[in-house]
Length: 263
Length: 264
Image 1: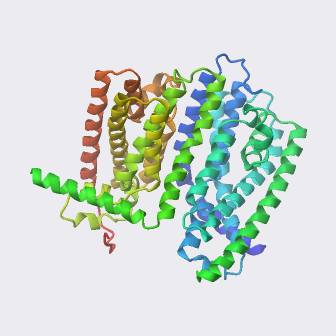
Image 2: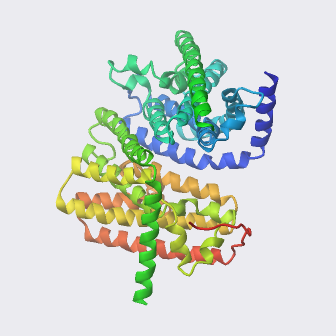
């Protein structure tokens, strides 16, 4: 395990050098949030309205938090690097290193989001306080409860992204599948809370990664309840175990494919 | 003079043609990229179905207008990235000193750079835009206007990316700034202008040229207005001239990295 901690630490130090570059991403984040603030301002005809049980402030904060997770989880490592390693044949060298390749990628990714996410969280707090106002009924302790959920959500997201990238063992370009997964998370998970969808669809959506990656952590921050907390945390553990199983299976199968093709 | 222009255009057309042919070498990947991009864009329909269930209109736009907006945005982005994809990675060429291979060619430097790459999935964007028009609000007049505004939109998009990208001749960090500014155009161009007010509206029509690229054309396609049409055309000419001027001013500052490279 120590080797993964060393990888994590080295990538963390490397990324700290590029904090200014990460901060440039604030432009895109701000523009997007600005669009959503205007959109929900328009959708809520009067300030006291409720849409799917959310007040305007809760709805905007929900979107800001899911987008914060989305921007904080952006990583070339889990998307481009895995695909490039497989397509370029570099994987043939990496599998011989004294580490398990998927865990090596996960260590790198964790170091990346550990820098990015707190930066975006700070920006979210500033924008929210300045442009939206406080979350109704919010308590600071909620943040402490939500942190493990966010961390689990980020890891689940990475596991699924790596699984998709590893499809490059079979197809040349896994990007189209990445687009679809991203859109599933973006449209169904970040823009709207699950409650806004028709009642018949909601149980189905709760079975998708959306529930554990975006909805869960954001819901806990805007509308915390102990019951919901346990439900989301349990779902995340189940999802993570299942995701790791799929990752292991794909990597094993892909490795055999690599052997046949000679790298 | 005319022969020179004709030759230059022929070189550009051949460059784009060979870029696309190169991408088509792996036909399965090519077709998958195109189809999945169309499907990828189509997923946003879900967002609008939900929003329009909550209210009859969003910023004065019903489903028909939203799809027209989306179609034009997709087609404009698509055409821009099919023909001039390299403009969007111009900062990388400048910062890494990779413009040498274009500078030694006996043809126009800017056009050679612009047409030296293509983006396969952008074909899906272009087709998706046309498909939306045909499904949601087809008429011959609207189709002609749509095609015209796809060209002007692609022109404005390319000129804006060229202008933002050319800042890399002066500032190293502007590479990221340019990509975020161009990216933010995507965010704004797929939402109705009716939801923005005051200073935001002013910015969208002047600083980030989404108003001229998408909003005005959509208004014209809904209710024809010649004055708006000439405004869009005039804006395209001015922005393009400014972008070309800034590129060539910046090119004087360009320093080679002595990188050995060949254009195949």
